[in-house]
Length: 404
Image 1 (cartoon, rainbow, N blue to C red):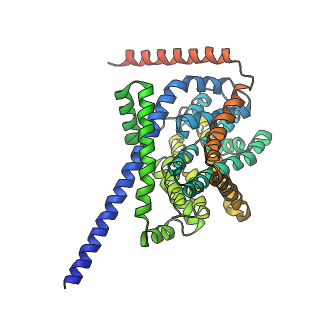
Image 2: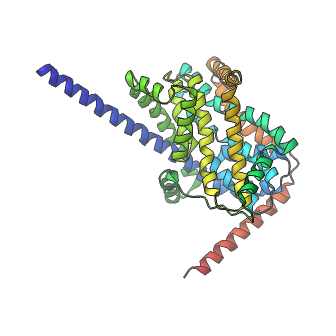
Image 3: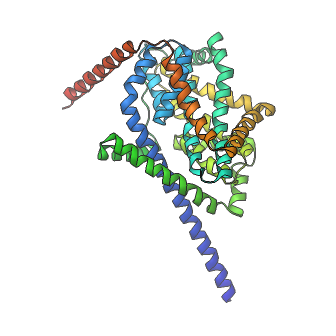
């Protein structure tokens, strides 16, 4: 009798510990995302007008691509960059065809979040190798899809042509104005980050505190996930979510669409791959699904709006969907991003500097150099930026006058 009671108590204690650990993971993930949004909010405030001015002035598709990449890598939000792109397209300043490379760049830039998560494993060489591989496989996929689809878009208007055809069939016409619907992230993570930023006020203090929160959240996210996923918990996760490539894609799409952020879903896979709880081969289809899921919010928000907004939202959706179909339907192609990511991971095992160098070069150095030497007249950028600020100031004043 006493043995049965002990077994029941032991089972209850294990169940309680698991619940506490799950809540701890969610809390740490919450603060991790808050820290990223705090940093992104500051960089967005500092560079939003400059980014919009460059997007407005550039007609070079490669500059547009790298601008989308760099802007997203800095502000840690592809949805913000995409909204910015939609704004300039909707205003009629930038045509849809010119905006498509910008969308592709934003898609590459959004994967920097999971790459930052990999830095939480820098203390352990083997884990850091796996983490870099788990993060870069998403980057490599987005880069390869861009290399395949961008030439088709530039030569034949591949994405923009299909998107326009779909919009015309649907019978949508007129000037575009997209109203972005608020979701779970807006009312939780983004609201808290905005509150902290308004409370702290000074940009350098916000950046410092957000880095401290980022560092500790990355450190303890890995520790708790490792202790949580042991024995049957690990087996159940493998079967339920990563049991087959199709199942993993559907879970990645559904979860990302539900939380309206690919940062959440992709960030969770990196510690699992790093600690050996999940193989890179099994994680890859899940990340592909996250790529589709991240476009759903903008697509739903654009329904019922005018043709330009729907067209650019469709281009984003089609770009990700075609990429996923290509790599899912052709298994021999599917192994390419995995092998490249594993190679980058093996380089990191030799020397950690390769991991840091990859992040800096791919997401910041190359885009910055390409934009700087693109032939953009920076005097025009400055004057356009001032004009944008003046327009926004006048808009705010008009809104205040209309208030009762």
